[in-house]
Length: 189
Image (cartoon, rainbow, N blue to C red):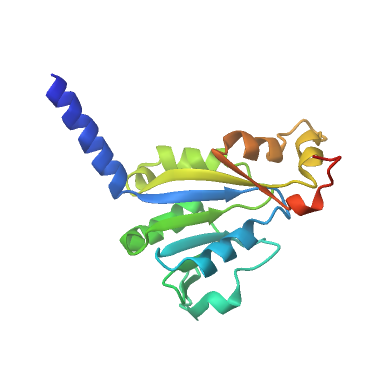
């Protein structure tokens, strides 16, 4: 029985490694999400990364990284370093479904959310939709936090009792990247 359990764990680990990892980049407006994605695309050249970018970003993916536009329905753009950028204009399931046939071309997917996005539905969708969970896995949820405005965002009371997105982003993150620390005074720290 022990050997069978080990075999099951090994099979599960193998299946997990076959899935394309998705790193969700979240954080409130102006926290530096797109700046981080641009940095990753510029500074690394060992991985082929597919970037799913929201269309409402304050800063666009750096045009200098774009090699060509494919004019595909999902707005796929091939990057100079072998990466791909996709502006998610519609349904996440549809977009990832269209990428599923090409997912082996990528080492990873970076999914940049809007500043007002709650990451919970993204995680739920990838983990519970068979079209997603058969091809992808959530590798990490990285929350960028603007140190200068962090407290204000976390303490913000929503008028109609709706969810504070900044709290949700921090709560769901397994990594929190403090950004703009140079803007915080010693007293504020």
